[in-house]
Length: 158
Image 1 (spheres, one colour):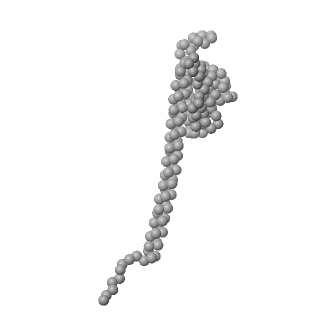
Image 2: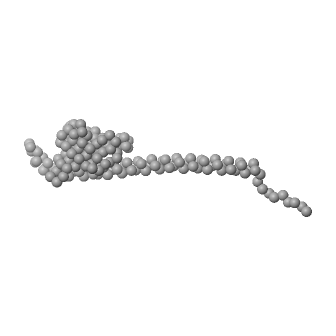
Image 3: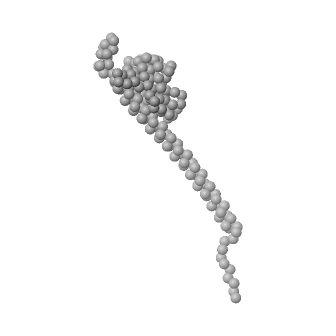
């Protein structure tokens, strides 16, 4: 009787294949971890940008309602008053607030203006706001559209 030898892999060959497979799987998980970090960063930047855009839209809307707008640089607050309501923006170290709504971004008022002149406190008609710490280069400038009724209601008129 003739015995036939079965063709198979040796133990050394199987170990080499397992080592190569482990290296490839390890590299794949490393690449996956890098991609996940990048996706997280992109999502975080998107969330910050979305929150800043919504903040900017609401600030523009509030600025151009019929409000008297006052800014206090010492308290880092912006108060908009009208016959109907009062809106308060407060700027803190790590977040900002619009009335009781919290905006979890660091937004810093940089300059306040009234009739084209920079002021520290008092009535304003324009405001420059920075969100540099959240997104580099992100600046917001809002201004009130002063119409004729605004000037007629002033003490000294036109």
